[in-house]
Length: 78
Image 1 (cartoon, rainbow, N blue to C red):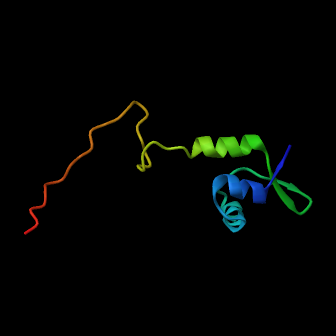
Image 2 (image 1 turned 90 degrees about the horizontal axis):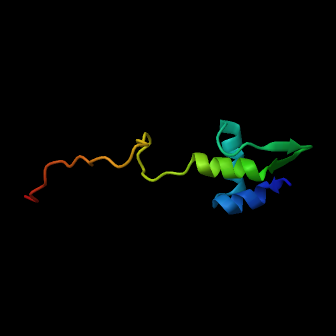
Image 3 (image 1 turned 60 degrees about the horizontal axis):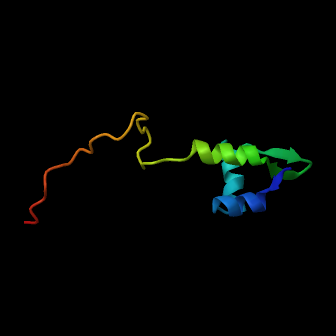
């Protein structure tokens, strides 16, 4: 079963316009064109979510566990 872009937008918490921009830029879940309609497979949505899941805001997160967070010098507030 294929899912409409309106439903996918709701699932991902973005607008259909954002999905359209992602398609133009080659980002976002893989999609299927059925005539002039854009549809998404459930597997494509699951893959997109899995591929974009993070445990940190850091882009190149190590996969072997947490590392020490470097701390700069404390500011004195002067």
